[in-house]
Length: 335
Ligand SMILES: Cc1cc2nc3c(=O)[nH]c(=O)nc-3n(C[C@H](O)[C@H](O)[C@H](O)COP(=O)(O)OP(=O)(O)OC[C@H]3O[C@@H](n4cnc5c(N)ncnc54)[C@H](O)[C@@H]3O)c2cc1C
Image (tube, rainbow, N blue to C red):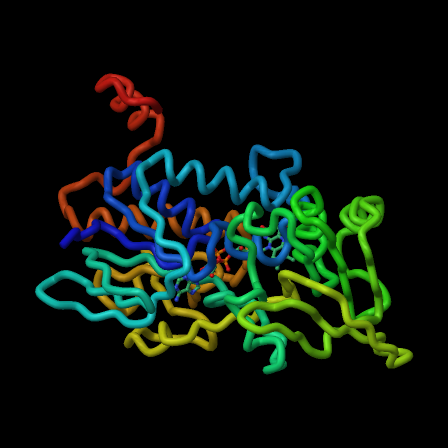
């Protein structure tokens, strides 16, 4: 049974920087994330947008920032468990047992950086299509290779749908992209790039049903203005119609909750010993609530330093990274 010093719930920007910071303070760290990838809102809600208020960057694309933060966390040895949602928390003999939909994790402290909650893709809610989930219907892309040589129907009009249409264009045999509105909501630049691909784009179209035996074989789509139907052969349907977020069971862990947030004090401590919250999910009664990246980064630095003191009361309250880097160099580690 591995007991980690700290377990971070959520790999959004706050959680990722927290995981890096934990490594900096020489704490072992595990990160649990509902989604198949790191980045939280950066990657799910606005991957293509440029951010201009992250210190040190004149501008940086959200997905690039997510990648950098992930790599920064990995560089400090953080262990990641994707596709895993934290559901229950129990403390036994000074150790927290964090239960997820996949198993149990043991940890001395917990850092909750769950943002707006577990972000889950919206489902179509059409049984005739949802029954093919895992057999041709996808709500995320884990490997582009999986779609090589396939005929794809991509559903959606936002950044995710158009980004994936673009990304998969060189892998797929054929792509049909449908959107129920008559315009795309994605970034103009992405829309332009996708239009230039020459794929089959149908606006004001929705899916009616899918047919197949063990796997999807064809889909019936229709024009929601004229009612005209078309049945097209498909090997996979990729659905990108937004996300919903829910703090879910975390609310019932016994912490003081304020609306959809967890109440913390100036050390980012929740009302449970050794459990901290930071970033969008944290509510600091004495402070103005700003859902900003820089606030999350500052929050996690405070939270991780507090967690370090919780585990090791004699440890310094904080250290400058320059001192830590010098120490690492002396023992032959990369900085
Ligand atoms: C369109 C848009 C533009 C923005 N632009 C800017 C900007 O320009 N500058 C700026 O500073 N801020 C911006 N923000 C705000 C910024 O993105 C958020 O403040 C930031 O993402 C919060 O980070 P976080 O890590 O606290 O939470 P999130 O990014 O929400 O990440 C939380 C993560 O926790 C995971 N999670 C939740 N519950 C669980 C669970 N039970 N188990 C496992 N995993 C779980 C979620 O899946 C998610 O990945 C913008 C936000 C939006 C929506």
